Length: 129
Image (cartoon, rainbow, N blue to C red):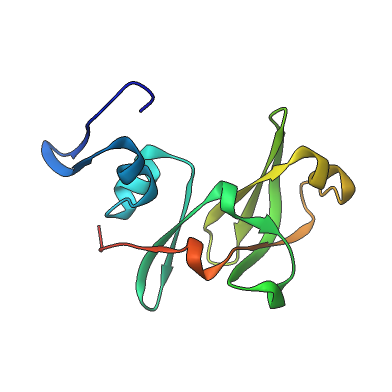
């Protein structure tokens, strides 16, 4: 993505999406592309699948906005960020990239309950796979 002017994503020999790298990353057209590109949480809602970038999620409370809850499965220190993976009741694995300073103010560990929260504006609605 760093060196491309045009990005093309294929699935099963069929072009599923093409465009500028930023466009494909910010607006994946379906769950396959969101997962393939990486950095996105993909959730199935009543309105269809949505993608939320992991760096736009935070640890919070259910009343803070759209959210999913579950239990921490992985805490991965990445220098300036800490990736916190959460397994939800339906079995989805979602993650948040939390700035290290914020994480260390309120650290969590595997097995702890956790809620991932995001803003409505950060949801990207996609077509079915």
